[in-house]
Length: 499
Ligand code: BGC
Image (cartoon, rainbow, N blue to C red):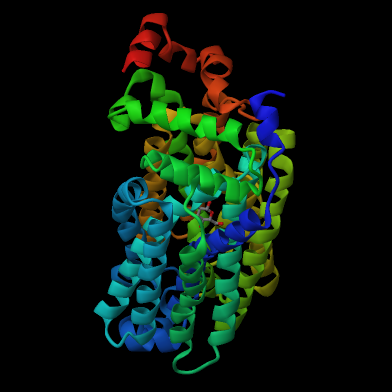
């Protein structure tokens, strides 16, 4: 039996299962935050307390549909989280290496609990923003450590599916947040406090869980605690015969420790294909406009003339579509492949965005409101848009970067993916409402144009990676690709190996 076959027999032990569930709370924490702020910013009690000017403007909404929520501070409330996450993810990657995954997860949940407490108790604007920043640091730490921990303890043959489970947890978190907002919107005047404070629930579970989980074997070995690493592996796998897998971990750590400057190596020509793809997928993922919907759906629906509760209900529906369609990705990703899913989604997202743009352009004037039938068409188009994103660019934006970097640049490369995500999520969160005010319906044509660009990118520059072992990527994928093969002329490859 070869090594891979041996490793494939490793079972999903109750211990691994429990760790996954627990770590899923890391995804829930992130998702909850994505989903909660939009609903809160649409609540009158919240606006009256912190943003009275916007509340005034909203009362006179007839004056301008597209601009009633355009306010830098209001957008900062949503976006500050991502800026904090961006900065803290670099510290988190250091903490992951030096302290281990377990303490990093513990820190994430602590920041999160502090953020929830401060936001729920907020009396003035700075408390609110500081609460968001603490949430953001929690997201930065959690998003770095949790997916890494999840994949490291997963049996080898399940790594891809486990990776998408994290995304599934994120979508469930968004959906729960939509539901909570729907429930708290009628609890006057403090409903928003429950919404923001509710983030403490997954954080407390994650905190308690991180006290009992075992550190990942790879992290222990990386920190020269090999005996403990082997014991942890036996416990996780539920068998004593773990030599083959342990050898793999040892040699992987040995190779990785020889690379003193992974970031420098990442800048070499041969690292370009996975690096360009990882960053591009993240930038494109955000320029689909997905977070304009995830953050601001309730606000967007109010712009269309929906009442507050109808808007929140519509976002519950989009949240549900998001969760359901992520299952489609789990089942299809290894059957039909990455490229087909991405390209199919480009077509579906393009049709949805253009339809929304045309309807708003022709029928939603600055002062009127949309008639019921057309508003329903817009909601359906938002759903078809979210649906296709959720079975393609959403999970694959994370999966592809995690399976295309060679081991020696994997964490450094993935850190680029995480920070590009946070940076562009920040940009969208900070700019969408202002862009909508200035561009009006054209904002949807702006996203449509990006969807065309990303489709072309997939056609020209993204090779299929379905079923290719990570270690064979260079030989079987990059060196055969008409464009990327130019990064691997023979002399360069030698230089790369020696670096
Ligand atoms: C994206 C998030 C987005 C979420 C929606 C993720 O893949 O990175 O920005 O909010 O999908 O489900």
